[in-house]
Image 1 (cartoon, rainbow, N blue to C red):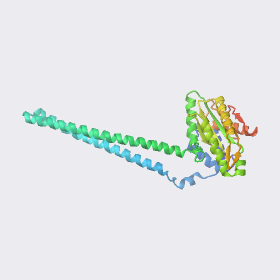
Image 2 (image 1 turned 135 degrees about the vertical axis):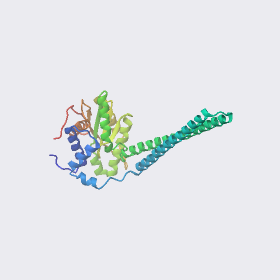
Image 3 (image 1 turned 45 degrees about the horizontal axis):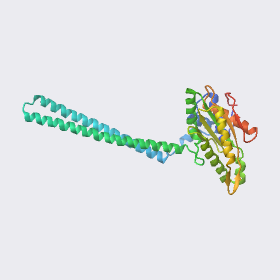
Image 4 (image 1 turned 120 degrees about the vertical axis):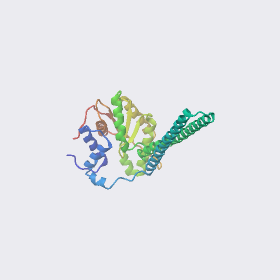
Length: 320
């Protein structure tokens, strides 16, 4: 039985343990269900309050997309009706043409067929232009939605991805690595003395340190790597196509840059360090267990002294 706790980081870790123990994927639905249960929150009561207000930007894009789709449907329906009418006119003119005897009648009927074919071509061209404009509008909406999602998944303070985006991100990378070469490493880092900095210099100083290390990490990481703000003072590095050695090398680069470039806050130097735990994806391992192993390694690094890095054992972990 897991005791009820109000610490978000501990609740998150316990929820991940439950998912790993049961072999469940870390989907948002599964994670939220276990998180609420461990925190002692009645999810049904929470849900009964009704859905949250949608993001205005997202709602606007969805409304515009619905309008564009309706326009496209109307355009194609109108085009189909016009083509059907034009085909009927052409068939009627052809029937009359077969029976026509006089030159003037034949000339008139041929003119009707040409006019109808020209009108049909004009209708198709106009509809094609309309559909092309609609396709461009939908592409713009798609880009707007992608930009909105990036904003929603971004930590406002540091610019790293937020915890909300991690489940899908890590599940996707684990699946990709398992399907190909299996090389995926993660590193969980925790700022050792951020609490002391906060106490001595204030919350603004601690925020500056968090922003600083996030910016340095972005500079060190490759384009395909991910930086996630895992909790208040923890960051998770997700490194596709990387083994333990490469992950450790990257962490040491980050540590060197971090120590050589301290934060200056109100004319005072803020010296900070971090402890880190590294885990490489094992055979048939799922995301929750990978996170747990990195977390255990990080805790070992903290217990062995600050500013250390530990590598996780390839052992599946379960809830205690």
